[in-house]
Length: 328
Ligand code: NDP
Image 1 (cartoon, rainbow, N blue to C red):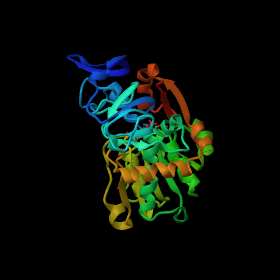
Image 2 (image 1 turned 135 degrees about the horizontal axis):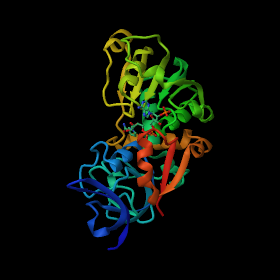
Image 3 (image 1 turned 180 degrees about the vertical axis):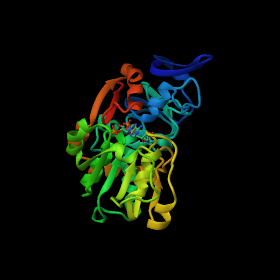
């Protein structure tokens, strides 16, 4: 048993404290696979956990970090042996189970997916939970029967992590992508990822009418709140909206009109508890469709020692694309 470096959140009388410290392997939680974590990433939920802005952490002390790539060190699970390269997204890590901002993690083998052969661990975490959620959202639209021939697709929160990967994936499948952003200075970045049109997110943040002019056949919404209500009201007849985020709010001030008068479908995306077959489908499609050059263009890399200072930036919409946390 040894000690290793970890970001740890503790809760005291005066609220939570977060620090980079050492953690003892003996204090890891139950699991049948121990992983040497090499990379994690910064997702919106990690920002919430580290700052304590919303109560996503359900156990203290907690090691935050909802995703990792790494190498199996020990395993009593039949599917995994030492040396296997693996990826983990969600399942409560960083919320109820000790998470990824650490040199080691012990988890259930059933939570792991093999690192796809054509990704390095760094690339897998450049995708991370945000990118895998973008893929789940694209798959949800496809499983609903939508394809690029139906018309344009909207992506909200376009310059963020989910948004950036979603644009690249949709463009690769032939969609005409409309990107909604509050950062006009990122227009060139978004066009580089494959956006055909950029709109100002202010257009979508005012109180929504029950129905408005039909503008897109499909949408991936990372913002929620009034934005999602507007997106629904502007979706073409028979279209669908994959709702995966709440960067702009948890509420949904909408009417039933888009559902009952235009047959719109609202498709909920939860990456945390997605069953393994759909996870594998998502990672296989990412391996097939995501342009490595675009992935590199949307990625910055920080160290474990930088993650606490970076956390507030993702909540205030200041990070662009994806942030990889290089651990060892
Ligand atoms: P990011 O912070 O990287 O992206 C969010 C983007 O939303 C920002 O870059 C910004 O884009 C936009 N935005 C931020 N605040 C507001 C606001 N007040 N009003 C309108 N737009 C805003 O986060 P992620 O991409 O990591 O996550 C996006 C969302 O998806 C989060 O809510 C997260 O919790 C959720 N999520 C859900 C998952 C699931 O399983 N359902 C899994 C992963 C993420 P711009 O500057 O371009 O306007």
